[in-house]
Length: 130
Image (cartoon, rainbow, N blue to C red; front, side, top):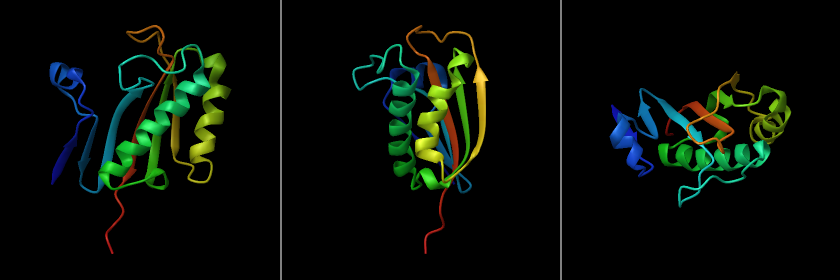
């Protein structure tokens, strides 16, 4: 069984993607940026603040899928300045320090919006219902 989760973004329909897909006991969450409800960038210029904002958003997506941070098995972090990886690492460690999912830090060129410094995508398992 497959279930798509939408953020309500108009880009989902235009580009053809979902915020997340729940399938075969997993949740796959698309790369997510630090945007507020009004579409503006949260934490401009601050990689730590953007990472924390993204992880908060992803926590809500995980919950909607029936999972939580402790169920994350892989995290992929895309950052525009690899020299600032420690800012991201600090925020990531605050959320996943005890979970320790597989991690990729990927240095990328600037995103479509140059104020976006970080995007994160996650893969998690859906816990079995008891």
